[in-house]
Length: 84
Image (cartoon, rainbow, N blue to C red):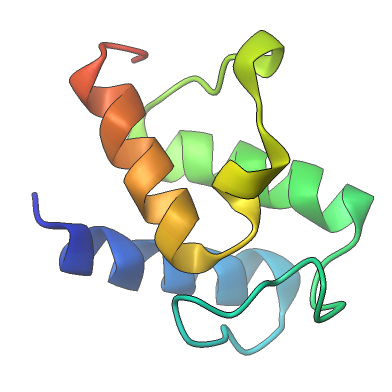
């Protein structure tokens, strides 16, 4: 799967889970106040379901989740590393 298709899927999950229009892929969703801590947990849960991956909490880095583009790249890395 391509990063572009992953970005599209992440955007759709973002909008469905949070009822908020998804920003451009490199907009910081935390700094721009589009998401709070509860929203981030909800989004991570929904992304795990959508992509069939498990996000290992011990290796979470906030920068991996600041943008939709970073989320898509992080998920692609998790799939590649076998976190399914």
